Length: 174
Image 1 (spheres, rainbow, N blue to C red):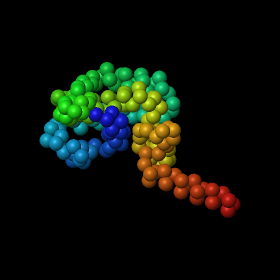
Image 2: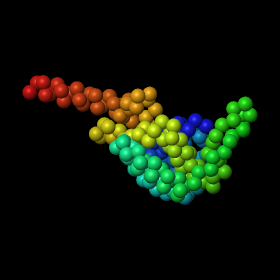
Image 3: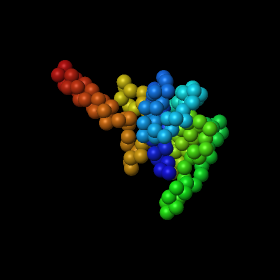
Image 4: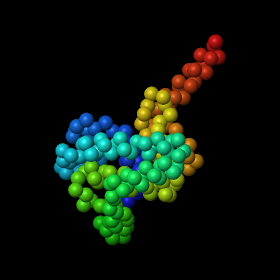
């Protein structure tokens, strides 16, 4: 499994509004086989996890590597992850978070934590962030070679650049 993708899915999970089961199904649009496994307890568990996980992104954004590691370790202790070797393609053995989780929430939480823990170990603890666009509170995973990402999306980057350009134009006109 590509653990970078798991890490990116964790950011998407933090950014997703989950008011009801339909929203969870929408979040899982590319994994429709999980829809039939969604249970009532998944939504409150995922909402709680979103609140627990956001501070990891905020600590990384503040360049507090020790806090990122400490918070991830706390989450890993509260939500144990069971990795396993997947052999559905014998020529391409790879790791997955176990699909024997008792709920969709446990699976998504496990994938998120495994992805973030692997990312922090491989790329460093300051590769997570919160969007720099003032009207946005989304989080992101920065896999850029020079660790230069500051926005959650191209849309927010453009919005911030246009706002800065307009502010410069107003200042020049004054």
